[in-house]
Length: 91
Image (cartoon, rainbow, N blue to C red; front, side):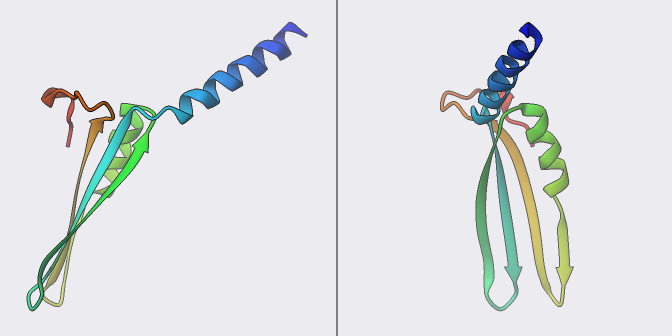
């Protein structure tokens, strides 16, 4: 009985931790079309841990060229707090 109660408490705490986002993955998508110039799109995705954010960041960075056009992505993880330190930012 105590094990079941402890399991429920742990699951509730675990769910709460998933909701509190601590890092933001910033993705910058750059689309370069020779006739139209450069367009930039910025996306922000919250993550609960630095490790999850960095793993996602590694999967997103790429460059693709076709018919004279080019698409590039660049991403970085930053702490969610506004008083972030420069050394906390990883690209």
